[in-house]
Length: 514
Image: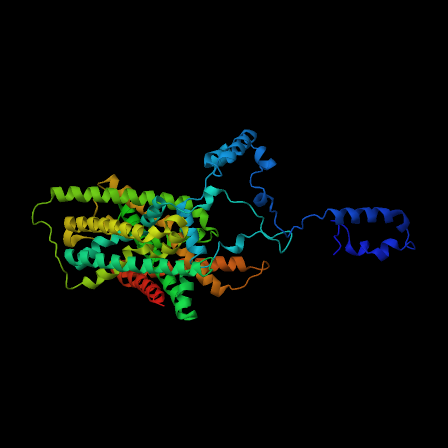
């Protein structure tokens, strides 16, 4: 095959045309064409569609662009000498000062990113994909630094598991203890933790088996499809959509209740149109709509970390206030039961809702370093044991302090926001944390449903605005459900969210038996 020089027409280089001296000017330009053809055939250039493998074949040779950076020449000299003694170069030597001060994606971002990419089979929204000037080209190959090739350590894995399970569910658990009774609630919480741990370990085992069979990404839907066919994938996606929608609705109700109390305390007014439930929920629609239009999930990394810090602050303050109440309480002033025969069933859904992080077990397992993956069962078991102890102590102390007066959301048992600035700050910070978490909970719902509603798209037309309109409709739907379910928040959490999570976990456990 004749290589054609860039910028020249292939038809103009046919030998018949070059040697045709009857054409005007061909006698003068014939030698030029022959010289270009000979040089091209002797030194063929790399086509753009083929990757540049120089970084892979010559790992020890630095690039001119690396040396041109501040301190690059000295750093290249140090790296060259180090490689002569050891194949591993410390990360602090490889990075320049500019690289060290730039933010890098952390384990929190990786967890949510993998949740979408690996477990839903969906990448970041393709709305932001830039049109390539040269079609059908592969992405440029770039050698990943060794420090980025290694997976998460044991510490990062434990931190991610804790972050995944400690959210809004812990605030509803004290009311669940009041519904079920102290001893019955403790037993039900332990059983729920054991079953959740069993399901997660089965999922990790199935993921490992599929990876050994050549699968690059293992999703919940894939496991369901392998076990039950296409109906299994559809069932898993439906339960996942409904459970995530339930989370969003509970967040809306929580924010409405707490911000309403703050407004009443801050301005000293009664329930008016400015602080009514409908108004507060409508204002949240205006807030969540632009957040739902964000196409790339990594933009939520910093806000998610900030939300976790706010949640930690709220839990610490609630525990400290509860312990103070127990010290000052008189014997017999608070009534607690060991078993509540009238509302014990409501506890079951709340106990399942507390372990809401089961949707992240696969990305957490896949993100681990290969050398420590065999320790995952032990890591998960000890972490779940710690979570059960934390949930039991938190809910047990709050229920022992307030008894039958325990509210659906524990923040409503704190001193009035009019009398305590700390209470107002906790209500505001926890509400802000859930506001920042709402788009992450809605993101899987959006991506799954858009695959069915918008299976194909063209860059021409108004399809992007159609997607925005669909996301706005989803936000309005969650707001409508929250408005009609706000009076029975604990029942809503137990019967809707908890049951759906249980169905989701049951699908996964049933799938793993095959």
